[in-house]
Image (tube, rainbow, N blue to C red):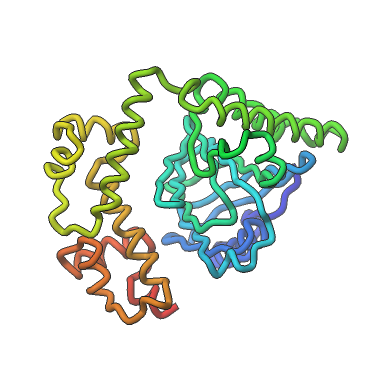
Length: 314
C-alpha cells in the first residue's frame, strides 16, 4: 500500500498538528481531538481496488467528529467499513453506538454525522465503498446503513480476511485485477451484511440481541428523565435487573456506562446546534438527566477532551 502520511520523521511537538491536517485531507472534513498530543503516533497507507479505496491506519487515542458543517462540504458519497486489528473504536451514528474491535467490524455512512472514539492505540483497515455501487447489491430497503458484523467466524471472518489479504498483496497486482477484486470484495461484504443474524447468532442469541435493541430504544426515549434508574428500566421492559445486566454484557459496557455515554452525546449535539444557544449549559445538562452541573462538566471533559463552555465558544 502507498504511504500517504506518517509521524515517524516529525519532531514529537509537531506530530499532532501534522496529523490533524493529514486526517482531514484523507477522511473528508472532520474534527480531530486527542488528549495526549506530546507523543502522538500515526500513519495512513492507501490502495485502490477499482471503486473501493482501502486505507490502513494507525491512530493514537483520539475522537474524530463529523457534523453537519462538514457534511455540507461532502466530497465522498460512500459507506465506511472498518476492520480493527488492534485496539477498539466506538462508532456513534444515528443514535447508535457500535463497538468495533478485532472480533467485530462496523459499517457506517460518510454522509451522516458520526463520531469515532479510538480507545488506546488503534490499527485498522477502512474501506470506502461508493454508495450507489454498494446499494445495487441489495434488494430495495435491505441495505443496513449502521451496523456491525462478527469477524471471528463465518462470512464475517471471510470478509475480514479477504480485506487483510488485499492489503498485504494488492501492491503486486495490476489495475484490472485490483478492479475485479474490489467488486468481489463488495459482493462478499454485501452477502455478509445480508445474512446478518442468520450467520452470526444462534436463535437464542438473536432473541437476546432483539431484546437488547428494544431496551436501548426505550432508554433513548427516556434519557431526559432524571429518575431513570436501572430498576425502572428493567420493570418497564419486562425483565429482571439481573437479566438487564446480562443483556448489556453483549455490548462490553454496563447499563450505566451506556446511559452516561448516550446522555453526553446528546448534550454534545445540543450544545453544537446554533438554534439552541439560548439554553444555558446547566439547562442542557438538567434536561438530559444530569442532576449536578459540576459532575456533568467533569464527565463531559473526560469524554470529549474539553469543557462544555469550550465547545460553545468554538
